[in-house]
Image (tube, rainbow, N blue to C red; front, side, top):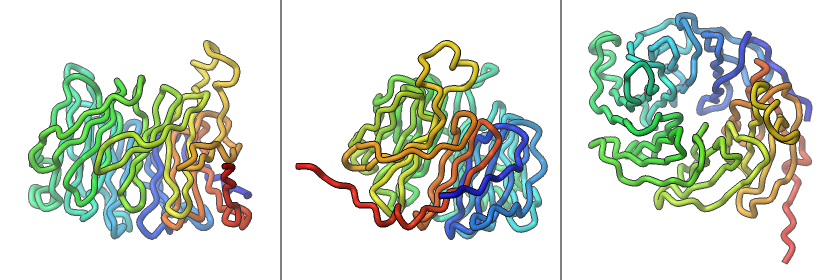
Length: 329
C-alpha cells in the first residue's frame, strides 16, 4: 500500500472530509487556508482564502455545491465549492470548534468555544435564513448552551432529528434538533472527546478520546457497544463503510511526549476489527500525531492528516479485501 503524500498545508492538519461521491477531499489546518484535492491522484484543485486563523472544522454539502468551515478567527464561513468564493461569514463571539451540514443539506450547525467569558454554544441555522439575510446577519433558529463543558466535536443524528455532541470533560450528549432539549447524556470517557464520526448507514457512531480509548455506540439506543483500548491518546477514529473495520489515529504531541512513557509517542494508524475488538494492523508514515482520519465512501481508500502538515491518501491493496478475520472458538 503506497500512499500519496499531499503537501499543501504549512501547519498541522485539523480535519479532513470526503464529499458524498468520494472524488473530492477537503482539508483544513492551522494555516487558515482550507484546500480541495482530487482523491484519486492527490492533485490540488484549489484553496479557499478568507480566514485569519486556525481553521478547526470543515464539512461539505451532499451535492458538493457548498462548503462550511469554522475558525479560531471567530467566524463560520460558507463557500462556493466550485469557484472558491466566500458566500458569507457568520461572526461569532469565540472560536468555532465544530460544524456540520444536515443530511438534507437544508440546515447547518456550529459550536463555539468556552473562552473570553463566553459559554460554549451549539447554534443551528437554516440555509434559507442565511440566503435571505445575506449571511452575516443570519439569526439561528435554535441556540443550545453548554455552560458546564466545552463542545469539542459534534455530528447530526439520523433524519436530522438529533445532534450528538462530545465534550472536553468526556460527556456525550444527544439533543433534539427542533426543541434544543437534551434527550440523553453519557459519561463513557474519562477525558475529552476529540472526534465523533458516524457510520455510513447512520446506525452507529465512534468516538475518539484523550483517555487512550475509542468506543463504538448505537445511535438509536445511545449506549456503548465496543471498546478499543490503545496506549496513546486517540485524536480521530473512523468506521469503514465496506468491512467490519475501524481505524484509530493519535499519539501525543512533542510537548507531552517528554513527560510520558516511551510507547505513547507512536504515530501509526491502527486498524481494529469492529466487532471482535482485535487489533489487526498498523500503517506507519506520519512524523507526528495523526489529528484526523477519514474513510473513502467506497471503503477502498482512507486518508489521514497529521501534525506534520501532510495528508496521506492510502489506496488498499487486494490483500486487504481478501483478508478474512479468523475467529477461534
